[in-house]
Length: 361
Image 1 (cartoon, one colour):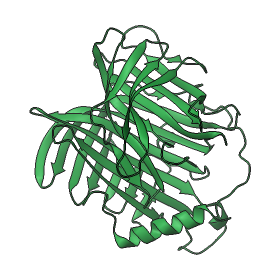
Image 2: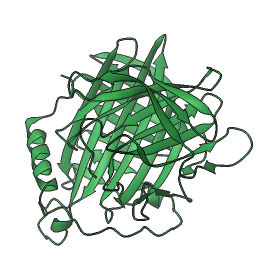
Image 3: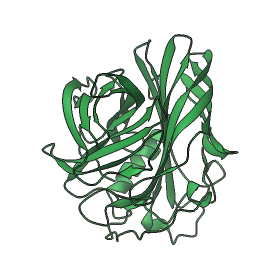
Image 4: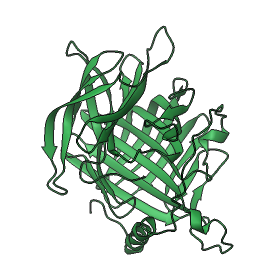
């Protein structure tokens, strides 16, 4: 069943929703993050002293004439009020995970979710390197690359992601502003152009697939300004090897509050980090979700320092219902990008949050 979650995890999700609205989650003011040099492999791992963190892999894969999108995200959330508790049962860190597969030719999105507290050797977020486990789901670094293993009722995948390029340190050498105040920032890096291979199983059909993927790792104490209700983000792997990130934070009336991103060409020149105002998102076509009644722009014109691009969802219905884990409903899906001459130049993922209700992190 799409979005199937065991009853125990539904209860945990309800418990987290109650926790999030209580005094257990710290409301202490966040401070501006200092600039610092990211160090690897340490910074591939978890940062439990920070409130929020996620590892996010998206990509596309093909076999024969079939195309699939896929994503897996692990979230970690620190619960401030339990940090001094000595009990092994204290929920000091909560770990969530989302996974999805888009079957383009089948016109179908499959997704699932997990939530549990860290501990007892079934939920892990290692600090020295990427080693994430949430029961039978895992994401870890193996050799120079990453391996994701996801098992769900209707789909599963076991994929290996091999780096072909250097990391992208987003923002100012890894410190990325997300709002008008300095405290609205995150440490953030990307690993684009990951060569992908492995197996994908849909309804018992096992397929050997190959493709390209993108990894983001981000951690912060405060991401959103009080006036921000959500964001629009793209991460695009060009077919020529270039890479593009662009995002905007939106106000309630749809006007941009903040924007940013980066571009790295495949040949010549280094990383270009965009300043505020250099990325502009203009919606062109909307799709209304029958589930949430939210209307999402599934086609955009995105102005960036590199070019004007048209970004189109390959499938309109790629909305994810994560109310049983993180509590949000959002849109995240495989999309194609076309340059100002109409040429298909890249494929990647578009993420849109805050369209059904304001997002709170």
